[in-house]
Image 1 (spheres, rainbow, N blue to C red):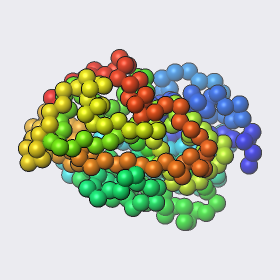
Image 2: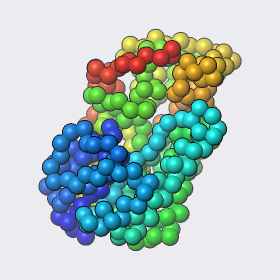
Image 3: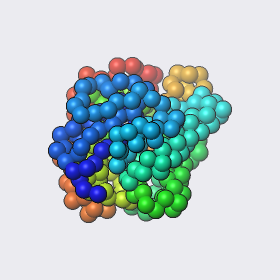
Length: 326
């Protein structure tokens, strides 16, 4: 398969990362065509693209066949955290069934390369996490942290799929928080607030990746058909307290025996709907990833550091559009 013949399909194409990826791929002369799947229309115009307003939990093999798709990037994912166990289970099943439907469509349409955007949270925030965590470290996302656990389960489904469909190359990208000018998504709304709750005596290192850097990495992997599982993060780290200053957020540090009950109470009272007390684990125990495997496989060197990514976001007009208690 040559680079000249590639037709790249993207699910969740109208989202933040999907839009950035399409903008990058549109500039690549070797790609023949782009195919976008999303229930929403693209937020910006693109050239040489077929757009399908469709929920990809339904089969898309007819559309993939019609366009001659050779590669598919699966970004469609529901990050919403349910208000109770029933809703959490429903969202989890939705994400898994959507992935299974997309995988089945790839088989029927003979797509040769499937790329999945996962998350650093599949490793789980634990006191014994190695620093840095390598790509072959076990996934330990706790079930009561739905975002990371759902990504964990999706990765397991992809592993089974890869064993059954050896002719399809599988790439999994475990990305840290994606930032840049105008970043606005589930993670930024949950993580960046006018008030931040911290845990006394803890100041974890955080990683960020600039949106254009992530798009460039994905473009390289698409063009070179690089399979495997890779950590993705910009160079350097930003510490939690430093981040609070940069985004001009009031940091409230409490001992664990107060911070955890307060976070859980605010969740139960619907003062915030982003995370239960489990989210505080992320501000105690860092998930700092090694990116050596990615650098070796792609040769890519990130244009922006973690600090530059955060600063670009902090300077955007989206910060604190919807204030919450903390």
